[in-house]
Image 1 (cartoon, rainbow, N blue to C red):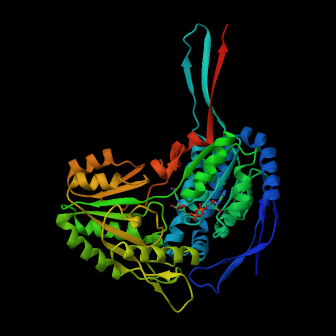
Image 2: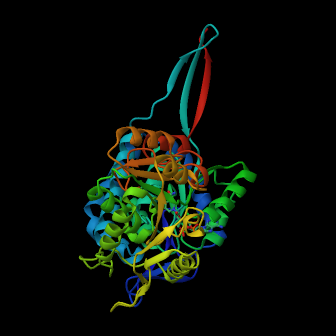
Length: 478
Ligand code: NAD
């Protein structure tokens, strides 16, 4: 069985015991053995990143561009093979795995361009004979902590801007999906990334993640993951006055109005709720449907959901792959039981035994629910969606906003006035009209409000806010 090590200071090093990376579509398929690091491994990685910092911040923008561009090209060239690996370790379908790899490629190529487009400001002073320049500088060493559900896109959208703005990196990927992170590290090395500029330490959140967040040599932490971990990280960073960016959960509403075109609304809700096995922070988990179209919509959703093909992620006909692991599957099944105990009508949601032994679950729709039920307040993070009946637009909007989260929200309507009002009033970071709540472009701001996100937005030019710091220089011209 092939063994994979962490990358520290340009060397592949075994920092601890090897752990199996198992395919959730077929638990007899072990992808590889990945070495888990510890706090001492983080110490050496941070030291390497600190040592590489001055060289990388002073290297030419052309050199940074060329590295990121080469990584983007390599990801695109190898997208079939990497997409396959992604589907094998995470369980999303092969088409989704290849699509996500292409997205990672596009992210690297976007930030390659940004290396050459970094601008500052020159402003006149209010005093005579003084010049003022406002410039952006790297933050320093950044720690990147990523979840398992987008194992190549999320690392890409953190690594690429971190490097583009002149930072050096220590990354800790999710322990469930070290394979994709390892592939990105290999590609960075192959493309000529100088030693220490990018370091990868695999391992558990409670040891490696904790050590990275609390390390005094790390200037900033970018985290994507669950609310509980995010709050814990925020407390540590707050105490240390460390710059921090958190992208956490969602309980995203999709509003379907009486005038919605069901040929748009139903596919958008099927996609938003069930694709990627519902394991997207932007998934539509609350389908808020106006009374006049409620029964027709519920029937159409039930029918469309029943036609989804669940199976091995690598099988070309599969539309919904397995749940990522046994723990997540058990948690989903508990929520299905909770839905029953909260008096929802439950369609689907049962565990499926297929020929291959994996973590398969039928998609679930909860009917007759209201917004106060726990199934509609807590993030399930599985292929489960609720339908909630609304009296009218105002009622739907109020329920859409009545949540601790604020990542995405969608509306299906043909009424321009309602669409406009929804875009203006939804308390979220991203709004969709006649589109699934999940599925975003790679070159624009990504993030949310309330309990979903904290700190500056990710992606696009907005990433500069987090990965750089502003300096104002005054010079006497006399
Ligand atoms: P998680 O919080 O369990 O883990 C995320 C990462 O944090 C992993 O790398 C983990 O090892 C690490 N970690 C765990 N404990 C830590 C600690 N004490 N200190 C430092 N690091 C620690 O989340 P997950 O289960 O991997 O991911 C699923 C969650 O991610 C969902 O809640 C989902 O909504 C969220 N998510 C959010 C976005 C977004 O952009 N808003 C995107 C994808 C996923």
